[in-house]
Image 1 (cartoon, rainbow, N blue to C red):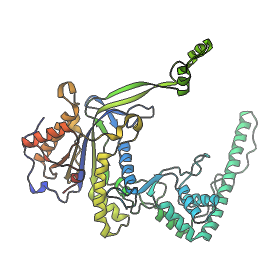
Image 2 (cartoon, rainbow, N blue to C red):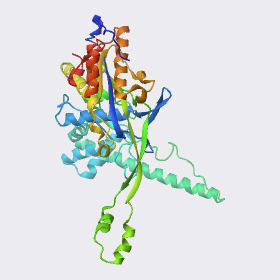
Image 3 (cartoon, rainbow, N blue to C red):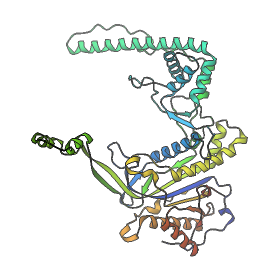
Image 4 (tube, one colour):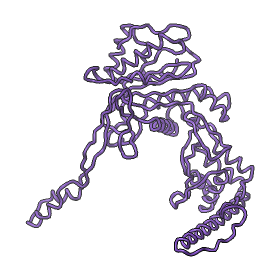
Length: 467
């Protein structure tokens, strides 16, 4: 599979203004479960006639986004000091906490926060444990609650008056709706038992509870929308957001594309039987027994406290992601970031995207599998005027009995694939290659010595971005 072709040397191969940064990664994981389906089983996909283990792009994107947010909030990494986003259903609670800090009573603060969020179109849960949570997750700058509370505090008297009227109207509408529902149930029961209920004339205006609630004042509505707007939250510009409930609040088409990861070899799943000990039971069994009764009771203390099965997977995974540099800058510009800050912010975001792609892992079963400690076998990065996905280099599965270790064969295939594309196109650059594996490092050295390495080896995550 080794290619001896020389990399492209055309001027276009440098692509200093390339729009896309393509990222490719091989990683080998053993006895892990990074993501699972609703039944607790590993996710899988069929490719080339073989079943492969899959890690969904959703799991990857969340791992990368939260990795970057946690680093930035801790003052670490290139995005330290930048605003990040928070995706949650708890914006009413967060806003209420900020209002309390401003002197509002706890119950009034929460009712006010819910009222203004309802006033822009967000709906809340119907059950006691979800009544203070929006029905949808809302991805907004993590400072949005404090910003919104500040606006409400500035107009405290007007907000309190509107909120009291809104809450009263809500309660009245809910009461009428409940009475109408009770009446319908009673009528249905009468019909079922053979009694003909007396139908009362329906008042104009539709169903009970459909009455219009007080409209949020224009200036207050603008303040709420401004607080929840994407703003200069870098991760919203990177990963995007969709919010259908508020027409005026802009959706963001993210600058990062993420593919589902899959194993280069056929899926390897096991159902691992485990038993969990009951410490108190073991203590009783292990204590010295001084009477025959003790020996009789010991039978009740035999066996495990709990048994079960957990699914585990092993394999070498291929991962792919793309950063659209132009889209990132356009998103920052649309969010209102000053022009003089955009280039520095975009460069910092690119460094962080690459770092998160290399170093983050989904956290499922972290403590029982130590999966977050793995390092990639190979990372390949290059620039292009369009994205390039090399997933089909693994359409034919790797069979280790014939091809040798999966990670080495997969590395050979990725290098050969990139060498092939370099020979045939001028809208792509030579690769930057990073490895943390001794065997792969030897392979890269051999390829370089033979003149078949389609790029150059680098020694840090920072060098994976364009020079």
